[in-house]
Length: 354
Image (cartoon, rainbow, N blue to C red; front, side, top):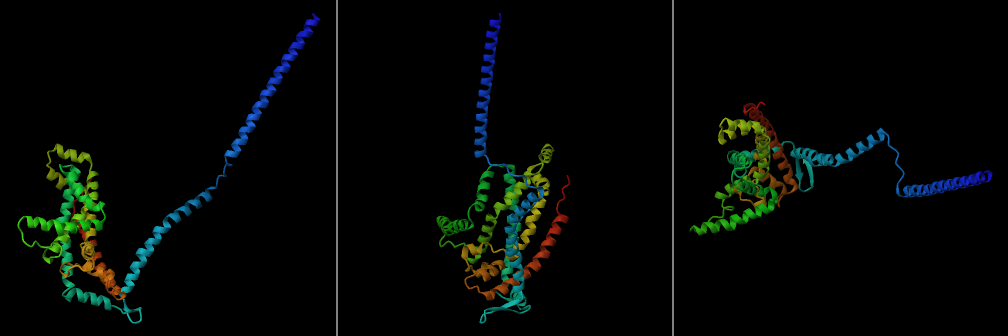
């Protein structure tokens, strides 16, 4: 019995020794793979960065915003503030061609501009053409813009065709559109007139009796795109409940346009009407695109005249003070007229209450 117990204890001790050995071997294997994985991780991963403090992050955000806004602010001060201040200062200066310097001359340039606008037989009619051009845009172009925008908004048949034709000038380069229009009027239109038996058809762009009307037509056409986008966008924001209520009440399309659509987009209309006042003094009817600095005198506007005094082939430093004086005078006139127009439109225009 004692021998059997000794044998059993020997087997038990041997089994325990094997078991402990396997445990140690398995622990060594696990440790080996753990060490390998740690080494691989350290080589493939960077050490975590320390979390910056709130003040450091705040300073970096402020620096980023400053860098982001620095360029547009610089452009604003250089391209707008400095240029306009310099233009005002040029109004009271005159250029000495012999010495090549500007010197102060008081109100000489302003007096000359006023004299030319009143008594010069060439310049004074330009102001009248500028007024008539503005009236044409307001009486013809403005209603057509709203009507075509309403057609597109209501998806009336052929509205897609109108949309393509009217948006085309806004998509294509202005010079390309000018060349297309010019070639169409110069070659296609005379061919059509000749086909109907007209002898010696007029050149609509160079005959002073028709050139001014063609320029107004072109200006209205190319101006459709931007206004249609804003008008149709304003119409799309009209609540559907209001339109549906009108349809249930049996309202006609014309009454919906006049009593619902126009009042609901009146704020957008006011913006275009107010900003359009300044075009009386700055509008040039795309004359520079068609004729350069050689537009016929019979169709020139006041905006084109002062524009070509600055960028024309014969323009010199001596022309800058005169043009600056004209710009200052027009601003002094246009600013109160614009504010008055805005006050009248807001006071007597339709008022919509939700």
